[in-house]
Length: 220
Image 1 (cartoon, helix red, strand yellow):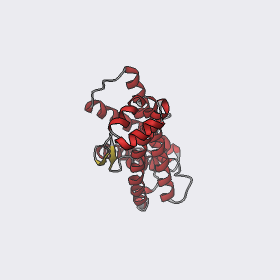
Image 2: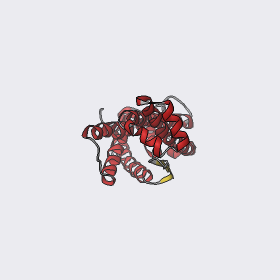
Image 3: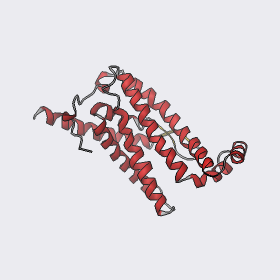
Image 4: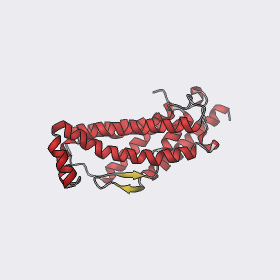
């Protein structure tokens, strides 16, 4: 077996394992947010680590696959009673694009000598990029639920103050910022701790594909 074949086989095996791990962790919520969603047990860390070890191209492709898996799980769990355009745009933004951006976790792997710095900074960028897309989707697609949210879920004191200050699209932006911002900060805190720990384990944090030619990543 040639060296390139061994590298490709190892990459595919690691990708399958980390994809499965990310999927399992995404179903475990350590903190449930009252108004929807929750903070997972480092569900994004396996994809960030995969991108760091095998490069951004492969990381983006693998994260896209992760997004498709999350979409299938979402469809199995929920029945969508929304307008068709909302469902299509939401799928493209919050599943296809948002999850694919986790592949940016490998963005700094050749820019820092320190695995801790490269892995953690890449993770922060990837998580922020993902939740920025969720923020955009929340403000543009789901913003119509903002008034209901601040009336029912946010509490009378906070909701009343927000409703008296913001209206229309501004209210939708505040709504999306609160919902997605709380999730992003929670996921960042948990993920950064995990990434800092993993970066101290050389066999886990080291780069596996030194050059793009060694990676079996498809041409994107």
